Image (cartoon, rainbow, N blue to C red):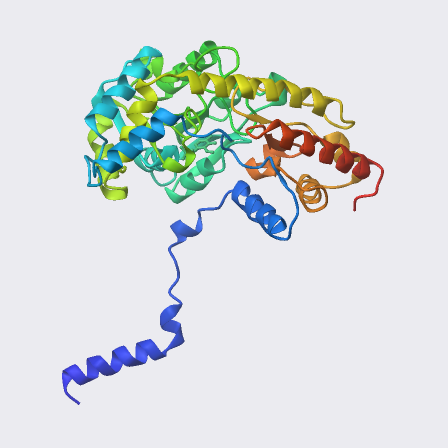
Length: 419
Ligand code: PLP
């Protein structure tokens, strides 16, 4: 047989051999894990397909429409055929608008330090990829957004949990971070307002964390995607406003929650000036650019009227106050009033103790038998045990239906009727 014949023969054998289709995926990618919210959503949708009404309190997205002027700006750009690649780090006009808005909240930002990304999550990925080396420890809140630990492992690091505690009304506690710092700490992830608890961070807490970061020369990744969803001021304070740590802080932010734009996939980072180029290279490798028409909508969101944003937060406040009062009236439940975001994180240990159910089992029963989709606190780490997360970014009608389901479910659980 000639050489070409032998090669063709080998190719044929490889195709015919089932082992050829079983190559192992990389250990890195197997470190990634999913998100409870998407799993529960899939189960809830399956119940709905069978005809049931389900209260969706599991999803973390505003139930409001994207403001009309933002939608129109995106459509206009599409109409003008703004459908080609743009610069990897983002359109200069959008970067300038983001820098101006950030500077107005005290984070003095050069447009060159803004990197526009497809959602905040991509920026989170880049931020951890850029800062974590093999064996580094990354301090992550527990309970906390699951992607922090997942991406950290993917990047070769080790997530180390710090406590987010009901004792401090879920406010960010610098001492719990200080207690976890070691020689190997490379990054502190801070998320305020906080998912899943709605806890916040005041200037003093941020100052103490900044001092810790400066003293140990570690990065801070500040996830501020809920910064406009706060109930006692216009915007949450940012650790990046502290000049001493500007070179250590990577801000992750997004239009998703602020302007009800979850599906547009528009986020951004504010990166240390010395790291601009590296982050731009990450953007070149990872997504090339965010669709320009989406970025045009983003410019309209920042530069246009903020009335819809304020109206949304006012409505969330009204629902929050109602929901907290209702939940606190349910036997076995204690619920803090969240300072930000659109989640409540009630303590349901009274119900668990009386019923013998686990947090996960209670959430399962609540969905399967009472048609209320919520997330078990354990979807956010061990620190979430004994809690459920309910999103109140949904209509009052849905919340009323959900509270009724919760009342019946927990009463049945306490009476031993739920096994
Ligand atoms: N960070 C936190 C804490 C979140 O809750 C979310 C979304 O739920 C994100 C980041 C990512 O948001 P997006 O990728 O839609 O901007």
